Length: 267
Image (cartoon, rainbow, N blue to C red):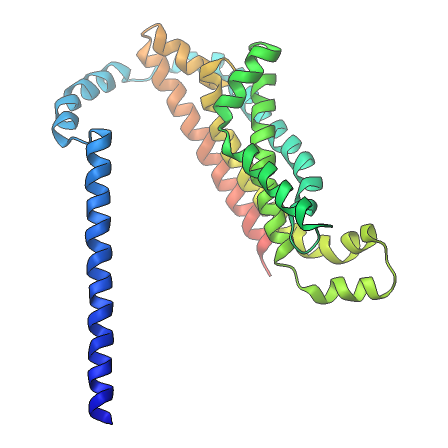
């Protein structure tokens, strides 16, 4: 009997090896096909390095005299990210309860709301920004609306998943007292999800701050507009200053957000 077990084990091991080999070959073939499709070429990269070095040499040293002029665009970028995040939270909260499997009133509502959230987060902020620039004109308001709509889809998904992971005990206990659905949410659901929601919101603010710098390049306000303007005017040292300011702003926001998230999620 032990002999047959040995043979069975050998066959099983051989089958697993065959699966791993087949998977590896398929993955390599997929990567090779993708590399050919995108024109991946180390030669072209090496050929372009001198141009990159020439551009960097023109950017250095940064022109620190324009720092005063960049103060207002930096504040505008922070304001865009702040209001984009706030409006996203306001829109995501009512949507997330309908998109949570354990709280949604019906399967049709659940699946329908999930698709709504997929649509909102599936369209990039730049696409929304282009639409709103055409609708409300150039400026930061278009950027705020773009970040809010896209962020509502992202935060709605995160919030709904946090609701689905709550402990059912407190919910059942509150329901057993004859509480209304609103009371169940207030006294049994929110206390369990608020820390996760705050952490997700802080992370989304970081993402929006980075996105706001890009949206400025298409006319949606912020420091990105100053960056692209300097680039178009071949003012490379001014462009370098904008890049340094953006890096400092993003790194500061990342540090502060990480500290706040750690405190919120601390047991």
